[in-house]
Image: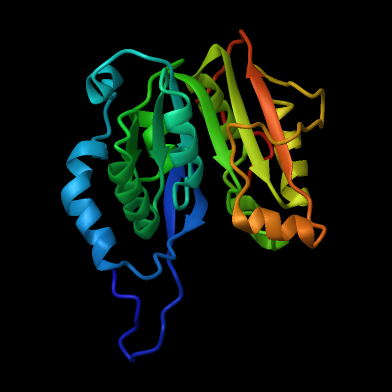
Length: 258
């Protein structure tokens, strides 16, 4: 694990994890690992062989990973795993894949899955872009979910946001026609960017119409912070897109991208 302190003992700023796309770098998150407890370390030691997917950089045999063939749901950036823990037992006919880079959140979810006896969840502790590019095949997903991604709210940091044109094309290509993409954000400015990007992405159709959003579906639990924010008058936007037949060139450069 990287030493969070500089040589003179001062706290060093978190370093962004970067993924090269063409000639530019996407900085979709910053590692702020937080406190990693002994219980979370034990979760990695004891539960990773059961629930973990080690990134190998080559196509993943999901049937072998789950021991069956079933529709698959991907959640990108699952945080502490609340939504995955809520959804998986309520939808046992589908398999769930979670991706998260922050180790404490992964550890919490591993402990929760073991306590619940959950069978239909597998977890990556890796960058989502690389997993999508190299491990998940075209049309391999029934659904993808992105809940409350880092808004990078300062305008000069907006380019680090995950939902960008090239990423949207990549993700759309991994969702099978007839599937869906569900996003949620509590930043209106990010919702506006999501509409700009996704309404223009081939193969994705906004279920609520252009620049539309839907009430929170029952498969997404309302978080404690979301409840508190709503009491303070903050908005939450759930965007639901259907994947339709279309030619998607995931290798094309992102128009207008920095």
